[in-house]
Each structure stands twice: as C-alpha cells, then as structure tokens.
Amino acid sequence: MSFPFRFVNFVLQLLTAVLEVVALGLLIRILSTHCVLGEEYGISVWMYTFILPAIACQSVVLVIFRLCCTTVGLDPIAMTFNFASGFLCLGSALTLLVSMVDHCGNEFAFIFYMSSAFGVIAGVLHLLNACVCNVYIPSGEWYLLINGMPDFVDWLNQILVLNPQVLYETFEEGKEK
Image (cartoon, rainbow, N blue to C red; front, side, top):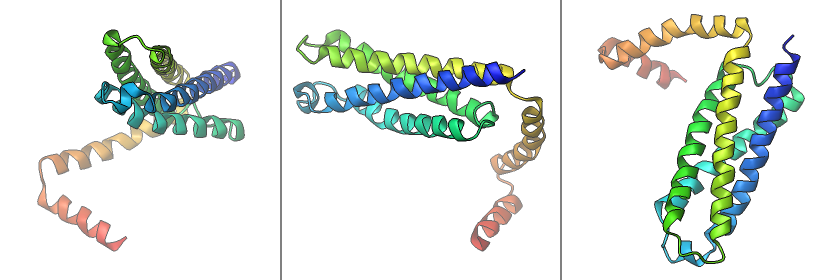
C-alpha cells in the first residue's frame, strides 16, 4: 500500500536534489560576475551562498540513501529536514529574486533569475515532500516520535527554568563522555 507514496517521495526528493544542484551551479557562476564582485549585491547572494550548498548536499545524500535503503524518506527526520529546507530555500531564493528587481539589466541577469527560480521551486518541492511524509508516515514512526517527546519536553523544561541539579547532571554526563 505504501509503495506509490514511497515512489512519489523518491521522485520529489530526486527532482528537488537536481534543481538544487543546478541552482548551485548557477550560483557559482553568479559569484564571479562583476555585480557580485563589485558588491552591488550583498546579503542576498551571500545568504543564498551559505544556505544552498548545505541543503543541496543533504538532499543528494538523502537521494542516495533512498536508492540503497527503501525505509528512508518517510520518517520524522526526513519530514523535519524537508520542512526546514523548504523554508530556508524559499527564504533565501526569494530574497535573491526580490533583490533582482533593481538589477542593472546586464548579461548576467538571466543567471540570477534562473538560480533563484530553481531555488524557489526546490523549496516548494521540499515543502510538498514534507507534506507527503506527514500524511503517509508509518504509524510506528509516529508512536516512537510521540513516546520520545515527553522525556525531551521535561528535560527542556527543567533546563529552561534553570534547575541547577539538571544542569549539573548534564555537565557531568558531558565530562564523562
């Protein structure tokens, strides 16, 4: 029953990884343009430069793991990765796209637009894949996720209220490792 959803998950992840790699290649070409070297563009290009390679690398690794391991992809970690990556891709690519409104219109404008457009599409596909993971995640995965949360929430609550005993125990456990 879950085969079509795993196939859809894999195809979405593959398309996302391909789009991110293409956007990354175009981004590398952007870095040597006189617009970027002349600091006409600042934070929009550099934010995209810092965010996109990490997400693209993780997407490629996830696609490779999906080829080797059929159980990877429809799990809470993949769902969280896709949500976070989708929002980061959308945010950084849209920032670059919006900054292009005032572009001088030289021969590199097309590369700027294409790189950010591929980033926006990849971000949307990440969010779509996260929704697929959310809807079709195996029930056993939700059971493990929900049962593990109360301990984490209790620990985090004790840390946030700065319980000295919990802080000391956490520090001592870290020293022993």
